[in-house]
Image 1 (cartoon, rainbow, N blue to C red):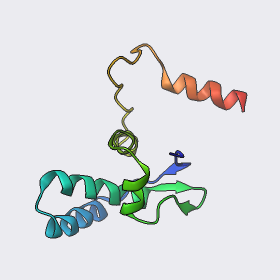
Image 2: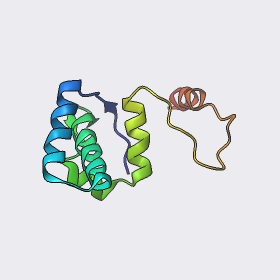
Image 3: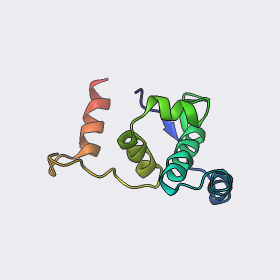
Length: 103
C-alpha cells in the first residue's frame, strides 16, 4: 500500500455523522467499527491534493486492519504502537528525519 502524503483529521461532527450512518445500517459491532474506520480513512487520506481512496470499499480492498489502525492512530495524534517483537528503542521520528535528509 502506498502511504498517504497527508492525513487530514475530520471534525468531530463529521465523525459522529459517519458513526450514526453506519450504525443505522450495521448491527454487528465489529463490522460497524471496520466500516466506520474505512469511511474515516477514505475522507482523511490524501496523495497530493486528491483523496487517496474513492470510498470505504477501496480502503478495505487496499489496506490490512493493522495498516488502518496505524493511520487512525496518526490521525488521532498518537505514535502508532509497536508490533510484538519490534525494537522498542527504534525512534521513528529520527528515522523519518534521516530519510528526508537522504532524499
